[in-house]
Image (cartoon, rainbow, N blue to C red; front, side):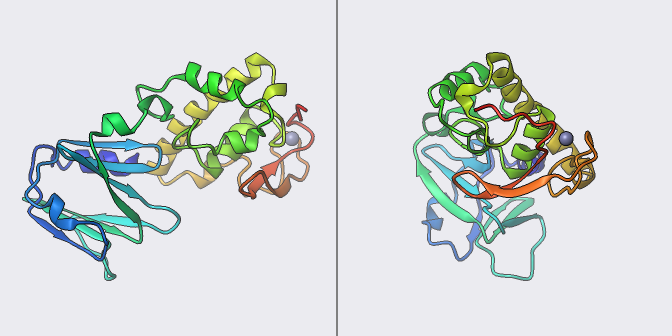
Length: 238
Ligand SMILES: [Zn+2]
């Protein structure tokens, strides 16, 4: 997570919160004068850990943040430290009781060093009827994945989005899991370089670069999220 890396670079770990502001309804005073014990992320959750609780920030669709500067709009939560300031806007903010290690299973985070592909494989095998387009968006299996990742990974692995998990050969299932993590690291690198869009091969694209024929564009799966796929080179396993 780019935000986590940026905040880690501020070295606020071990520092106390000296200012809390914002229109969030959470108990802001709880964080005042408390020491940050860790900065973490789990999937799309950004976490600031304190001794007995964790601040969870989720940016949803329209959230944004500023570090050591302010936007000209109402701040949801501002945390001030000596020498650093974090500002969060239009995001979901929550205080979770207890230690983050007890709340989060780090092995489900596709970018975590604790990521366990064998666990993802096990969970997928327990859901043979699940469509791959839903599996790749399921935060309980691939925490951190999203709609861009889904489309690009299915294109890379040549799997049709309406394929059923239980019909994929084992090697294909393993490839899907591996490429989801691989693509997530590419995604992060490209995003940092501001070159993410130019690397898209399927997402928002009209023509399949492998077959030179039009992509299908449909809203598929439980969440009816946009899917871009090629009927010719992405195989339907049903
Ligand atoms: Zn194709």
